[in-house]
Length: 335
Image 1 (tube, rainbow, N blue to C red):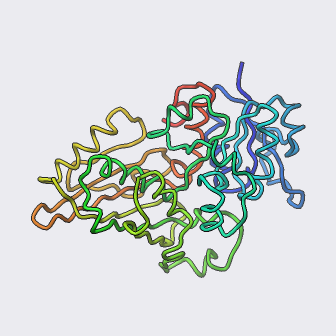
Image 2: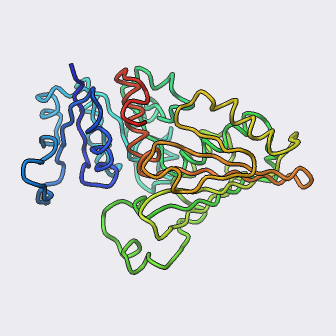
Image 3: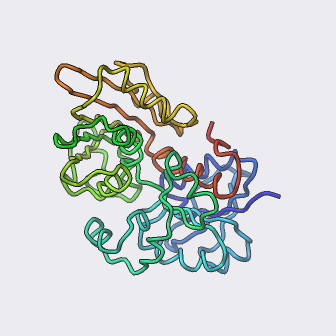
């Protein structure tokens, strides 16, 4: 029997990516849950209407006997829907930031909004499988990580765990993303004429993804500097991370740290010392590619981490989490 899954926010970029990935998943049947009443159906070729569309309600989800629901929505929508879905016994994989942080105080500081579900904040499993796979297995609420923190945490945490970073010198993360990371809702900042032939920084020193990196890499805020920048591209994230090393002899030692941590991980690929990934290497894949350089004389280290923001940074990782929660092979439909 196939598992039945719903997608709320299926018209957005991450929602479209979810449909693309799940359409080839042999173990699921997809239902699109329409939460907007003011939109016309997207045009479709005759005879190719796609998955069935149902109402966005707990009752409709129960009638369809859904096993899980993806929420590719604004945090407010996720907070409205999640309690009822969980109460109905339906697992939730939330792609918004609604449940990524652990306390209402932290949420209010970084998202500038109130959060009225402290118990669900505590319960939600942060869905970075490479570190939280065991906790995700059997969980009923998965909070899918942000795209920037996915690339950053996979690059930074092994170094912190290995004790090879001089934290007194801090870590700098210079992060660049394609425009789809801002979502599909039109805005002046992401319009064609503003983005094309341009390159800009935004949310400097107060980007809402910063606490996810701190929380999952074990960093204090005063040891981490993050700047997000908008590339004139549709998709992809490339982060260049700078640090001062200690107890390291050369770049090969860094590569060994990553290989020891990720050799058995299907979606993290490590490059030889001195070689680096680019966005084409990860486009439309669920991979995170990592390359390193290190100068022993000065202790300067550089890590380059690349992902597709709509796949490993959103929909692909969400399906990876669904596979764990619903007991499919973790790589199903992603390789």
